[in-house]
Amino acid sequence: MPDSSKRILVTGGAGFIGSHLCAALLDRGHEVLCVDNYYTGRRSNIEPLLGNRRFEALRHDITFPLYVEVDEIYNLACPASPVHYQFDPVQTLKTSVHGAINMLGLAKRTRAKILQASTSEVYGDPETSAGELLGTCQSAGAARLL
Image 1 (cartoon, rainbow, N blue to C red):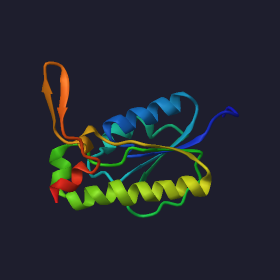
Image 2 (cartoon, rainbow, N blue to C red):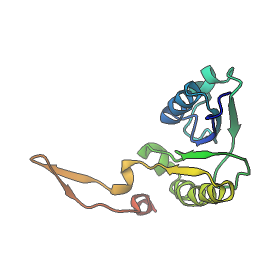
Image 3 (cartoon, rainbow, N blue to C red):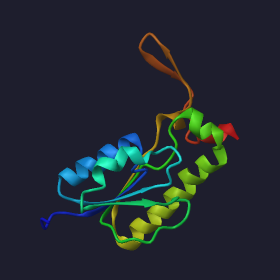
Image 4 (cartoon, one colour):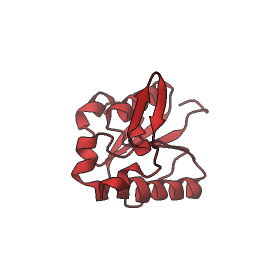
């Protein structure tokens, strides 16, 4: 393994974007720990990666603390589709809030860099008119589902 390789955690790693990110990081020579609770992610998305010795998959819900050693964290964990997050909005908020807090705590403890991702759903429903974006934007868009 090259000296520049890192151990990278990808939460939501069995989702569409997460699984492609895991593959790209492996292609760059990094070790990848894919964490997913499989609420919306699919094991079939990461099956091609399972044979790679630098890839590890862990079923885990990030609303609970995770104690691993990593250099970087990509937090992609959260249902992105209205069908999924409206099914259990409380769990969606827990994943977004408690999960982010847990990943920030892990980043602090390990001194890892962290990328916190979200979906455009947090901004609410935009209105478009003649190429202009109008409407309201809310930083807690999922909260309106409660």
